[in-house]
Length: 125
Image 1 (cartoon, rainbow, N blue to C red):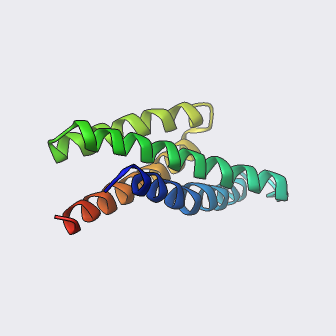
Image 2 (cartoon, one colour):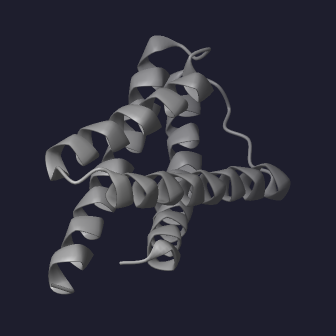
């Protein structure tokens, strides 16, 4: 239930959900918009790396909130609100449907991080 586990959980889930999932979502959006999807190793690596770093930062935010906010529902609401606002900053220039799709992906990630964080906290008690 320490900092290390929160950072590791955030980073690993960020790699899979935000990084790899975000790259797959980019491909879906390209098809939806009628563009020919392009794949480069450098671009895909960048997206996966950014997803992992975003996950690491959200793990830090989760840890700080868990440490200082005692009410679980307030902690969850604050975690989701803070991280979704940061996510919004990254997608605000996209068309509306891709914005919603990326914000939903971020929300799924955040709910999973919170659920696993709650589970790890209760399994240690």
